[in-house]
Image 1 (cartoon, rainbow, N blue to C red):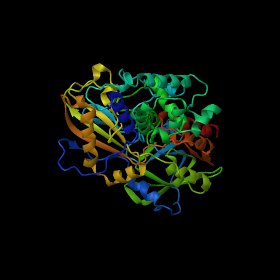
Image 2 (cartoon, rainbow, N blue to C red):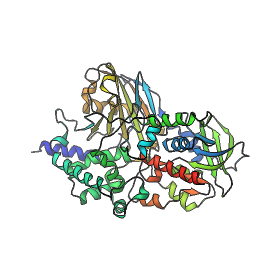
Image 3 (cartoon, helix red, strand yellow):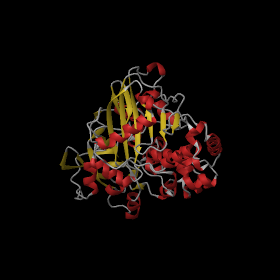
Length: 500
């Protein structure tokens, strides 16, 4: 007889195969409104990738002290920390934040990318305080695991309880050890660095963690780090999983609140510091002189432009930075362009009617169309949560990033939304209990974040981050896609410039 325990364990194993279903156009008009795509504006970047902008740079039209390429969290942090200098940010999108963006439905702010933070120790909390931000822990219950079976409950409280407690104890010991795999990676101990040579799956097996947990841990890893446990560095995986024992902190709308605060801090020191819609296609470093930066307005790509800067800070993903750096060590740029990036879909489901009482994050074990769903209102104090509408932010990473990018480019919105809604009804029926799904808003991220594969920490520690007066400053530099990585890299670049 197949036991209930075996059934749930099987669902957990199925979660390790998370991919979006094949694109099959919905046969019927959906009963909800389907919003237009948001997310990556890929056309200008693909034009640069495909070599359409290889011509020599035009004559510089402007000279600045510091130019920052990329207005995500790292780039904005660099600019905000250098706000008293002549600094300019060039951002390809029409809005700032990188993947730390948010939108609004009625009066609910929701994330379309990164949603929460964990580490509020120094120097991270000091920066948040400078920006006037007060991170608040998410109220209990923070998360739950769902099997999709009616009345099954969270297996971590039942069938998996012993194994899950052993996992938490293991991570607690690491968290209290000087050998914890930390950010910044430059301060890691030798035993911590040894973890980078293992996959997270190998590490878990070595530590005798129950195999029945692997499905849940694969979902965690795929959603946060871009790949399942067998493809992730144990250094990155242990660092990420340590949040199981710690509170998490979320702003309404996710980490976009940090991006907005950084931009406001910069703008208060003087207007005109940020240019959006600016696609950078070439950077030429200099030794002791001025770096030259070629860019074009995404709305007028036929008009190349150029500026000079005493310092240029490249705060873009490394796979792209390697394509726009000119005249530097080709071995370094080749290493950068070989790094793998995850691809991602985010579906924000907007409900009208009395919302269900949901935890902040719900993990769907065995779901084929998504990994987890965050309640956008759970980051609000209970008294401020709306009574007649709500938003669920659903994360759907692709197991095969290349196939995911192809599907996202095809852009069949209904084919993405339909299976997500169908499985939400199965795994989270209470969300539909007294409410009506009014709209689904889709966001596509073709290169969402770095995949922290085994060996990534060693790679990033060895990779040069300075080429003359051009500095790399992006979360990729820490080998882990995290707000803390972005802040560390920004502070490192600022220190060099300040000393310079």
